[in-house]
Image 1: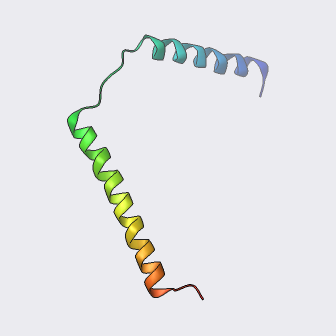
Image 2: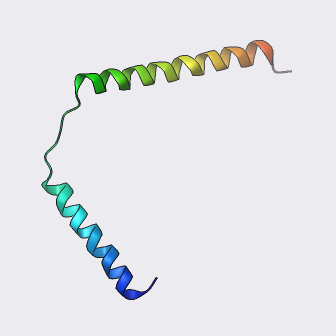
Length: 61
């Protein structure tokens, strides 16, 4: 990477860091919390089903 391009990237990173530091913290909305809970629950349930299928139809010898 050429030196001027590298300076531009560093400048962008510094500006981004400053903007993110200036941003306020936004709490999660109730709908977002429900989506997270559903996603985690679905993931755990599907892992359980996968484990059951694996042990039932493909037993270890």
